[in-house]
Length: 453
Image (cartoon, rainbow, N blue to C red; front, side):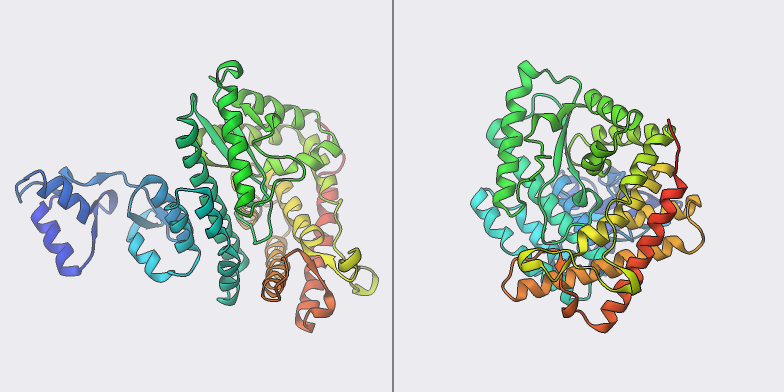
């Protein structure tokens, strides 16, 4: 804190680093980079004795040591910074730079994200989207777990959305009122794989006036959704997209919608709308998404009848396991000897965890992070939270490896798995995982049984 810029430059030169963290009693207060020395010190003709505090960036963007590199790239691109301090238990432990990341992952997801933000046309973005299958298979071959793969693929998807919105604002002009583009479902949970459609919506400021601003946001949303489709994120068959005016509303309308869904729950409607309870702001004024999520958590905890309906819906999709632990096949046509691992394995776990997360007021969206909050809240018997996490990982890895095999065979990846193609190890552990899901479905049915608002 008391050092001058000469000492800062000497320290950076001696240690061959491009930045320094500035602390006061072990508390991070700023960062100085080589660019700061050039533009804020040398170019301004400052004396060598000038305190380093005069040129540092105060309160810099930081990340936790457990975060993924792909998240760092998104933050760097979004904020136009090249260095991010890394924190552990509230204390700075180092710095990551764009050079560090690209050097480590020149052919991976981080490089792809960086490349996306450099593109200035739909054609070039579409060309980059063709590389996603290679990136996905490389992650699987590198033995990345489902959390790492889901995070990487989700951040690639988010990068496409952000770049398209940037290009859209260049095409249609700046937004007339604040807005937030939100991801729903697997992208919001950061659990996407290679085979996904788009689920998104738009939260508008309450300053929005349809007569004055409607045409702008209609044009922007249509343009972004159509071009996401060209980049490999197919249009949602259920039309849950920002291009649908029903899902492009001011914050106050969104709050009213959620209040109605929660206070007057209808099982069939909630089955279709459960995806909206996984909602993440990814571009624009993210405080709008934060306010809406706070509203959702508050309403859900106050209306237990809503949780009863959500729990019932979480029991709709059963694991593909029959008597004597044999697999139950449910495919049709070419998929007649398969079962759908997403619909019959992963989705039930996500549904179960979502109900518990809403019950305990968790502000997390990722399923594994929600499981941690659920365990901390004591909603599950001892050991059951770990069982759920292990089941999710086991089912998820079989699904991901199957998709990798499909890509390598020249087929379009999907969620259908033929048990005849699984190893005895995979079969045995899949059965164990499905049993865990079945027991958890029974538990949640009684945990939230018969409660009414």
